[in-house]
Image (cartoon, rainbow, N blue to C red; front, top):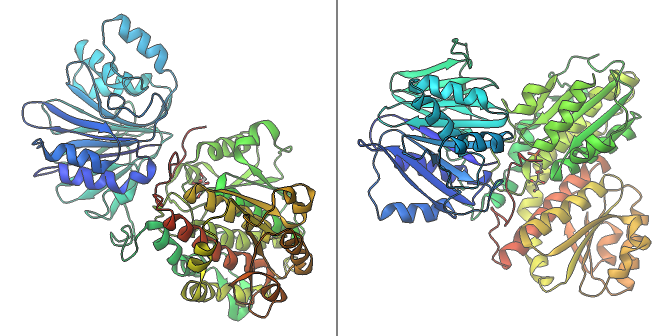
Length: 604
Ligand code: F6R
């Protein structure tokens, strides 16, 4: 968790650092801080709260310096106080450090350093790093060596950027937490993620575990921990700054919901060939998955719902498949062997629970693939193969477009797996192909015609919100409820339609609207389940095509176009995203940054 940024260049770094931190707030927003070389030493400003509050604090004081670092925090060690905000410094303020990750041996290091007289002022694990660097400086080592020696002592995960008083240099290291370098003529950046500096450069280098970089006005030196030079390729990211901003929308979430037609078009671009009636997933050669006997999909939260979608699709295609919560995987995973394929579904590619599951699968000899949005993410590096969903940056904490793209990519991947495992005729996708090709247009039509704002208003005063679906509608029901609760703070639950009568029906009242998803698979049964709730007073909102019987029976109706059952759920999900969005907006919730949550959950 946490977002870090560093900048070396001419002029004042403050503006760049603060903008970068704002663009990284999706990684955490418990506190924020910056440190710059101001000519006479290191000047630090930090406080609890959002970057906006830090900006107000800084506006009253002059803070000037061409080289600096910044941090936005999601608390792991110690509450979100001013003292625990980064950057952290040593006692003399000769060294300042920002860190994302967890230092597992911090207690032992802290005890050792405290014994030698180094005074700690925060509860964080991070504070051991500046003190450790200072310790080596006190031992007579020069700055770079002191940094390397300190890094060598750290156990756990970290992306660290440090600076030492009196020089225009940044030192950075990566182990298990993301860190990317941005390069423009005479200006260099270090950050947890590309949007931090996208306004200034598109040329990036993703660092790998074990990398140490030294950045000064002359450029960037890529080395290993011992200082040996290493080669790292630069890449050009094709995200423009406007794409990473809110554009015409009030919230990133709404913008990202509306980006789904583009995201889906990008996802399937060049990967399906409807004219020849085939999926052309060039990412994997035919035969890649031959010999696979079982597929396990591991993921958390919204990605888990996409994984469940993918798993149900695979089962329908005759491939043994299970979706598992990544955080349960170490205690309750089915057996794994070399004939198992484990698919880690993670938009960020940095979710600690999912990485742990992936690492376990790697250790036990399974074949591994990650389905991710972030090229250069840890999951993408550690899995045997990666399939990128190409959804573009998602800033809203609540995942929207990445869910849709993940689900569609899992359908394409599922087709490849089914053909490899069961023979070319296994996955009969003939009817699905034209539907897949037109899914961006269909999502567009849903967005253009949605009446979700009116539905949200009508049921604003409810006590609980239920979502039901069957087959591929079930993961969508779970996702509809998760989205609703995370951004409205209202109680919401998703159920398999048939489960309602096995207990949850006891909760149903006129104050519990039931959103029923109709995909075309056994809809009569789902309608019966919805009517069972309706008979007991609950208003029913049917998400279905206009000519569907449910549209007449229900109290309200949200329209989706007629399509294949395998894809109808994705269209229904767009309507449910909009219902959640408008409900949260009516309640004036901080939609892009719901309380207690963060975009990228890099702790277990
Ligand atoms: C909910 C949400 C989270 C994430 C989960 C996994 O809207 O975004 O539930 O889906 O934390 O994140 P990734 O996909 O990055 O592994």
